[in-house]
Length: 303
Ligand SMILES: Nc1nc2c(ncn2[C@@H]2O[C@H](COP(=O)(O)OP(=O)(O)O)[C@@H](O)[C@H]2O)c(=O)[nH]1
Ligand SMILES: [Mg+2]
Image (cartoon, rainbow, N blue to C red; front, top):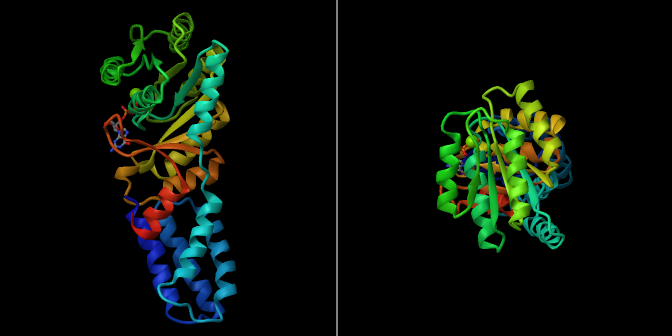
């Protein structure tokens, strides 16, 4: 995964290590670097910022020849990546869930995102992860819109060993969510995960529907599930959901299939929201904590 970004960073480091650079050359390298970032799904604004930071750092280095294997450049690139990526802490989330459990209330997480981004799969993966960490959960089938959505969720819930609360298609998603919350409370189940519908185009209706669910159940956290393959579209969608509904964390699905790699950087930087977890495959266990190191090592050391 992330081969595109890796190549962009590598070829920059290769070219720079060979000799001392004039100011004009630094500018040219920075321009090429920005273009290769943009070609790999890094949003223009973010590429500009990374380019500026790189130019600053290179100017300081430019008068001397850099040693093999461009280690200094890679260290600088690594610093730049650190400044734009935001990590969400799974351990913090677990602590919050534990606090809520002590108070006898379920911790409610609302999942939002466009159609096909990976919400339903991610809900099941997170339910499975939480179960392994000692927190049983209940899943609300609040996608009552897409044909097959409830069956898909029931099947995944069964696989994960987690109960799914659902009604019929066309039922009010907020009512389904509320049902699940009340049931969790009555049965002392510490977490409720609410799966919701997406649309291909993020329209006003969908955002209003999410807003209504939020108003009715008052979730402890809202998670936007983005598709790493969607590139800049995923960033724009994340911004709409954040403006309309409010988002606390991002989970980036399908990172395993992402050959370019810019989505994590753009989403993190442009929404300012921490990335909590990443999806790394289609199985229930393919959900990993997001760390800066994950991106850094994939890009810089080819891991
Ligand atoms: N390779 C890969 N596929 C994923 C990942 N997460 C979800 N998918 C697939 O993406 C497709 C859409 O996922 P789904 O959860 O139904 O998306 P939703 O419409 O947002 O609920 C399904 O075929 C999933 O198996 C992931 O992390 N990696
Ligand atoms: Mg779904």
